Image 1: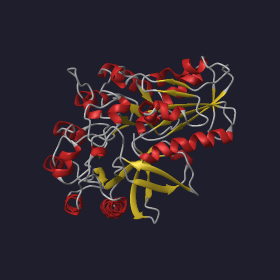
Image 2 (image 1 turned 90 degrees about the vertical axis):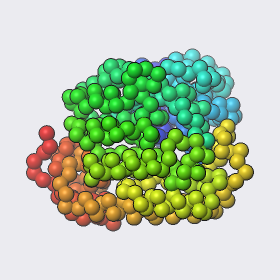
Image 3 (image 1 turned 30 degrees about the vertical axis):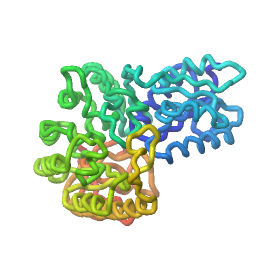
Image 4 (image 1 turned 120 degrees about the vertical axis):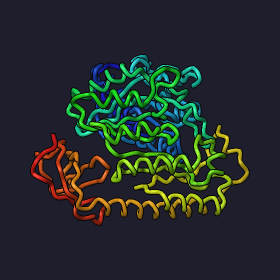
Length: 437
């Protein structure tokens, strides 16, 4: 294939996938390919997949069908977690030309260059146990923020999760290498960096370095106003990390901490590495030092063996701790996991009802958190888009703010005072005159 052709990318799943897609896209652009939108009749479609839930698998199949409608003669390559887990299954999807596994996706440009005219379906996927290399990446395209990949893989093997099978063992670069990539980001217009990975608290595993050391060094980088820690396991979110964030220059008071269940019995079945007492301790430590911190929580409903009593333990636990919002996942069976072999299956209608209950609880928690922030001065990093005369942005503690659109505020940190919670769930704010240095 010659380099005058057009390529389009579509990303499913997590922030880590978005980071990797962006890095892969830059290699194509540097090689002379024109990156276009999915709808712009590209010559090559590259779909970066997720496989956390069954719906993600279905979405991949829908996207292939959509791609072939848009550009019937286009070449379709599938990468990502689903591609590593089920390459043979994907290769049988009508319209798929190439499937690349966890290690091979970063060399996709070379594979595309070798494509012959016959376009027979090609699978290149190493066994995940052989995937050891860490490939750094970061997203570009949003002037406001970037997702910086600092870690990959996971050694935890929770009973419901396929990610270790799709991503391999935990691995990362050194702190020095990670700082080098972060400084590349600092040379752009980006004001905020979100640290991402599969299990970022495991950074440096097997070496003398660790995530706390990384956080301390990143805080010294000039040119980046904010660092935000994405999802981090409660047992890896040490009190020293919390203490440091509370007084740091650039790390913001926003944490996303997976819980999965408020029942210690279910946590054991899930093979999680903590109990609810430890989780509660982390929340209390954060709120003691940073009363206005935003805390998001992942929780799974309908896990095998989750009786009504065990579910209510989760409900009561979540009501009792000072958190800001929930990400609720309805348990779905995944092949090659321990949980799928359980006979204590929860009927889907019960799973959906429990999910509905926790979504309502999340709405109440978020409303309460927003109400607590009314009238308090905060800083917001405004985004580019004009939403019917308004602009949006996030504060350091993850309040989503709306204010009258002003092009001079785009990608700027501004002091605001939120004074009203709008019907769309955003906070209307008054922008102060002075900018934040």
